[in-house]
Length: 429
Image (cartoon, rainbow, N blue to C red; front, side):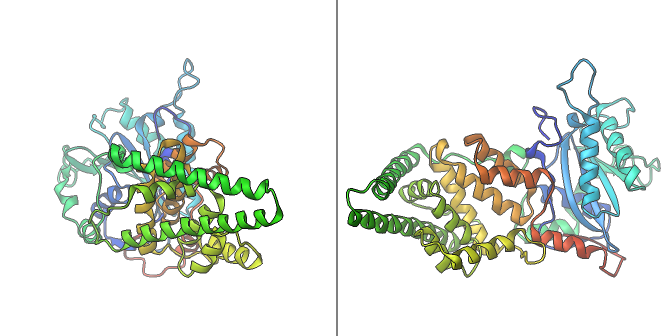
């Protein structure tokens, strides 16, 4: 959680729900190695709560908060951090994740052995709250130089300085993450940063967006205030073509991104990115782009962009939304489609002026949430609401994230955890 906003509802620190890849962790070393890959960055001065569920003790929810967010509220600072509320909020989410037990990991460079220290008190506050619901909660300590069980007093098992961090880097799960192409940013800010495009490219995109918006406005006005019925029909056809062309620009950009090799830079036209950014402000085009995130929706997306909405398109749209949110029909996102789409959306956000970024941020948040990356989803939905505080779809998604509601396919996975046999290993989803 952000120390500037210490309430448990702060979206920037929302729980991270399970990701799609299944890997097995054989012990605490694997779990500690996995957490930074799960978060996408190295936690510092933080407490991380991890839920373990089912006979095989699968890793489910991973939620991180700042140490300051677990400070008890002082009587003279009614607006300050409320550690008790934060601990209760985290515990509620862990329990709601169908956890059988929990692990708390304390990340700090301070002396965690001092009973009155901020770090120790934060970990103990969360452990005490979790123990009420999930007895046997373990606490692990990770410092800049080592790791150990917080309560272990055996110097052979847990030396005072901890076991070396190199033991985590050499685990099987760390190797698995590297082979998958996952990386860990040095800081949270680095993990979520979107670097602005060069000024020349931003200028080209800004001018293209302005022209594309002007064209859209003229066409919309032509349908609303026609001089004659024939003119209204021409304007409607032209508006449909504007939507189709906008969707075509989006599809071309996604194809270019999909054709690049992993790690290879993708060069997209600033003019096209500006037009896409302007087009996303049009609800039918935005909805068509959303539909395109699922395979097999080409015809429906085109009809939506062209404003040719009827019962068939409504049904197809409902099917796609069910694939994202419904626990019975939900499916994991198509990695190839969503990876390319996210690259294009990020390029749009880094090229167009800030007042045009809300739809791109919202779609990035939705993709992240569908993948189970609650932290990134929360960051991007906050970005969207920072541009447009009344953005209805962003407000709806924020409510789902703040409530710890995972996408449909994850909820189905959660329901199956307790029926999973073979209890000898722990699996991270």
